[in-house]
Image (cartoon, rainbow, N blue to C red):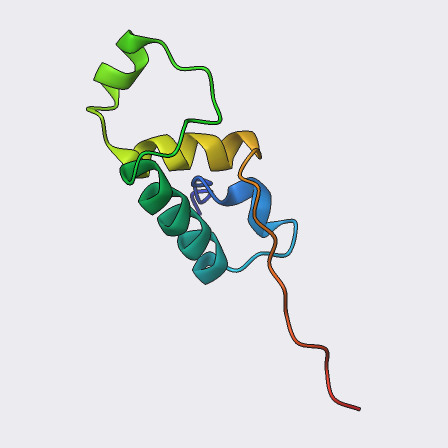
Length: 79
């Protein structure tokens, strides 16, 4: 059986994030970037052109590097 390829969220899912939390974080960061927030990565003009100025792809890169400053808060389990 072929091994599943790990996506962008591969490293973070191991840290306990669900795919929905990953999608929410990337989407929220992409919205910030599209509204003019500065990049948290140092990207050259060539890198930005390769990404086609796509804020989602830039947010995915930031997420993969682990530099998105967001925290997931979950409710505590009821006893």
